[in-house]
Structures are given as C-alpha cells and as structure tokens.
Image 1 (tube, rainbow, N blue to C red):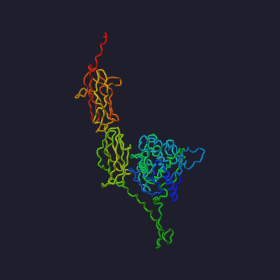
Image 2: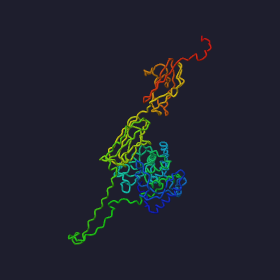
Image 3: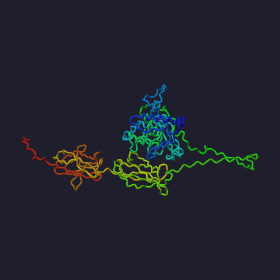
Image 4: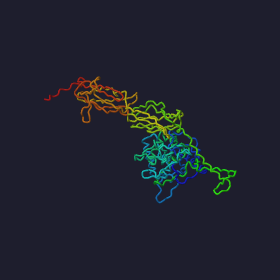
Length: 577
C-alpha cells in the first residue's frame, strides 16, 4: 500500500459497523452477471475469515496494507467531469471520477490483454478497483504527462512486525530500502514480483512500477495468468486473492468493481478523491526499544556509605537505569534455512518449434544437511536468445515448494526460434547459487507425406499439367504445420540430382525452374506446389518432395503425345501451300 496519504483514521467499532453495512448493501445490489460472493462484515485487520489458498507465486503486494474505504451506497450515473467553476458534485459522482491519465492506462491495458490473452476477459474496471484500494488511483491522479507518479508511492517496510517478512530483493532500486522490501507504485508491486511481472506499458523502453501505464499493464498480465477466466466467479476471485490474499481485500475490490461497472467518468489529473482508511489502522505494531516502557524499580533500602551525589551526603542511592529490552529477532523463515538447490529428476527438455515441452522442470530446496524445505518460493527465469515461454506467455514464473521441497515449473512452450536456451531456478529472498537447465527447440518436422488426390498427373509435350501437386504432412499422426519442404524434379529413383529435361516450374520471370526451396506447409499441414509445365521431351519423370524430419514423397509425372485414337480423325484441310 502507499505511504500514509492524508489523515489516517483509526477504525473503531462504529467504523467496522458502517463498513459491514456498506458491504452488505452493495452485495444485495449485485449487478447482473456479477459474482454473488458473500460480502460479510468488514473485519478489522488480523481478523479476516479463512480464505482460499493463494497461488503458488505468493502475491503481488506481499500482503501489504491497502485502503478499506468502501464506495457510496448510491451508484453513480456516468457524468461529465466537474466544471472549472467549482460546481459541487454528489458524493457518488466524486467517487466515480477517475483521473484522466490513470483511466487511460487502465483502458489501454484492457485493450492489450484483449489481444494478448483473449480468454482472460479482463475488464478495465477491475484494474480501477485494485488501483483504488492500493493507491487511491495514484493518490488522486498525481502523475505527470507520461503517467509517472509525482513522488514514489511506497508501502511500509515488510519487516515481519505486523506485516510479512520479505527481505530486500532489489538492493533498494525501486523502494530505496536495502534491508526489507516495500510495495511500490500505483498498483503496489513488491520488487521481487515486479522483477518478473513488470511491463512497458507506455513504450518508453523501461519497466517502471511508478508509471501507471507500466503498472496497469503488469497488473493485467498478473491477473490473467494461470489460465484464469475473469468472467467466471472462480477465476475472478482467484486472481484477486493472488494479488493480496485476504477475504476483506477480496470483498473491498469486488465492491469497487461493481461500483465502477455501474458508471464512471474522467476527472482532471490530481483532482481525484483519496481514501483515508487503511487496513493497518488500529493494528498493534511491534514497538521499537525506544518506545518500550521502563519498568519501575524500588530504591535500595540499605543506605550507601558513600555519597550518592557530588558534594557528599548520605542518602538513598539513585538506581541504575534498566537496560532497554533487546528487540526479539524475527523468527527464522523456511527461506532462511535453504542452503542449496537440487534438481528433482528433470528429464531432457526437448520440443519441436511451436509445440509444448512434455517434461517439466523440478527443483528441490534443501538445507545444508540435505533436508527438504517446504514453502520456499523458487523463481524460474527463461534466458537466452529464444521466444520460448511458460504456459500463459510469461518468461518468469514463481512457484512455492511443496511438502517434499519440490517446485515444479509451469510447462514450457517452444516458440519459432530453434536452438538451446536456459531456465534458471533461484530462491526468492535469499542469495543461493542458482540452478540452470538447458532446453532445446528443434525445427518443425514431418514424418509422413501423402498426396491429397490420386488423379494421374499427365501432360502433352509443350503443355501444362492440369492438376497442381498437393500433399499433406503429418508427424506421429498429427498435422505437421509450418514444416519446411523442398521439391526437386530428379533424374531417377537412384539419382536424386536435378533433371535438366522434362517437366519444370516457372520463376517470377517465367524461366524454367526444377528445384523449389523455402516451401512450408500451412496450418492444416498442406503444401500446394505451383503449376508444372512440360518441354518437348516425352516420358515418365519423377518429382521428389522432402521435409525436415525425413518425410519423403516421390510423385510420378507423365508427358506423352495426345492419343489420336480417342477422338475422330479431323477432316482434311487445305494445304498450307
């Protein structure tokens, strides 16, 4: 969550009651098509009801605090921006106003995700709802012309005192803290999540968590991973809980999502309303030693024979001040016990271009004694000159180890670039030597070629063949698409050199060509060759088609004079002389 914006209000019993009533009322007025989640009372921090388990890569914010303000009970109708004359607006209209640049960033992110991940069905209103509870729409739209916040928006240090314990992962690059991580920017990403989820949303060549275009696009991709369909209640809830694993957080975001879906409008940057209540208001924090109470001590009943003050005198001695209590060390986390990473039986990683890898990478986290360590986040990063990705189109994935200490990376998907690349496994939040895995992408291949027609291919000398040669390529019985192929008119079955007589293709200039390269099968595995022509040589000729993977097909072509017996003899014609 952002640093303290405006006046912080403590949530008392009255605030909790109001929040409960508001959520309940909003739940009762669900818009058609909205999930009917039970929006119970808004509990104080630390009293959240049980929630479904978070996804395997933790969450975007490190469960940082967030704004708990709820939308007005009366949903707005879309209305224009407040006038420059200062015309007052109703509370609903004011809350529905989203700063222009921030709103533009949300809508651009939705448009890009609609093209990149159409099955996700991400609505921009969900980004707006999360932006509202995370940073109050970038502190009411305090951004410059490029969408970068004016001043950094930082959550509290995640030092384990009232919050999660996440030690520094970015050397302070994003949050300025070299000891602990802090959530950063309008969408409140922690640095370790931004390292793989960050996106360049405004096309300036940088991935900046403080830029609302970059942050909104990153949030969209983050919510659309794992194949979630956000038009379905289960997918929507899973995605929101993966952002911040709290039932109260889910209820609050769903309330703003419903509110924004009923109507919103653009307001000038810097004029948006800023929330005031946070989820950590009223939550006891661990006190530092300087705030600890000094225990009272009784004076020594026995007089000290020596003067207690300069100048003599016998009185009660001044007791020595007690030593301040030593602050307790944060409890050791599973991550702190990891000594090294070990391969967990990963098989050879090979896949054909455009296909999925059948084997998954498994990495085991172990102590120095070789014992498994559960609940440790392992980050898998694809490196090298490759367009391979994990399922869902990401190049970085974070997975928690299971009870056996093993983290299984998501399935790899090969791109079109062939060759080797690497996947590096590292421990999030701890400096441990990484573990590298080599994966190989081979060319698309076919093992079988067959003609799609059994019509004989014949032609008269000097003419053209009536039918074009079409073949279908398959690999292990499945369609072999985009497979490279070569077609050559050869001399004989035993001599595959190019024939200089007989049928031929034509190049762009109409000249005879008897070898075609750079051919590829289409999406259905079909390859249709250009028209064939014949010179004056008669006889039987061979056309050989080969593909990557070893598939070969030899097609027979016949050039013969027309059969005069098949038609009546023509009438004598006058001599040309």
